[in-house]
Image 1: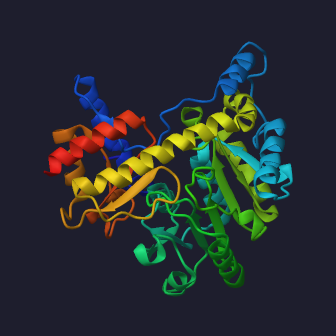
Image 2: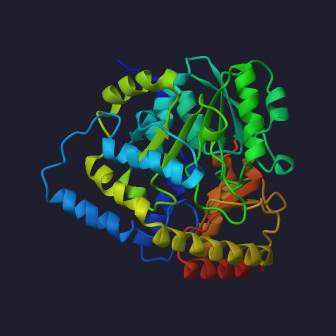
Image 3: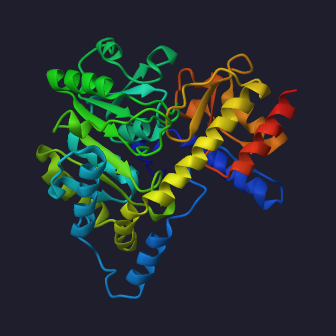
Length: 382
């Protein structure tokens, strides 16, 4: 008898993780690899975070926490919104999660029913689309390109072809690194309010920008779900901790879902994360390094023939149109890794329709690695 495999698990893979596996296999054979594929800070957590974790390890405080997170951490996150944005956030609206991935899962489960239609830009982070598919929710992709700076717009929403139940926005975005200004985010928020569309705002790259200011959806509406993470600006990737600020009408549903699906976020990580908000100098030094890496690649990539680049306003990505070189970005990235040791992510991961002609470079690594990778690509293309 053949046993059934549930359809919800038959979703596309997260290709960047498969690229990373291939890169690690190459590295295990003693061959060099330059990791420009994964969006992971090269630096570890700040020193005070490590110190706080050691204190927590030596105490008897590592049992379960409340499903919504440690009250002290939730209060500190609320203070962060006051300090950085001037936004008043009640700590009761803050939900600590097992990475931002759990935040997306919980918010999608609480806000959308199977068969609902949720809009998102193409290109965008593949986890949105694939989680929605696993939950039986229909992703409605908006063909965003250079004219809209790879971001959704009210005009694209109007052309979506039918009623929408949700909209996911990301600023700074992954993979393009572009930022929505306050007026653009306000226009999208207003449109959602008029049409009864639930807004999910991915703000996990806040703090990592280059000349453009980020806006939080919390200053435009009380009905949005705002998602953030300790993995990017706060440089705590492997600690698997994120958070969201939720509207009142979703709060109890999200709490019940969190209780049953996750029990609680990692306790050690929560105790440690309280300290990270006092590490601005160290964290901003990381952003200064990203800025240097960005300038280096924006200068060197065109010398290697990669000269059609999205505006890299924030995060640590450069999204390159390589359509003159290939229409199969997956094969192109595979050959690049094999022949140069430079690992990058094919655009097909972010855009199933047009991604064959795009690739993404991550510049979260060491500056020396960026320099060597750029030189190898220049030699490879010539």
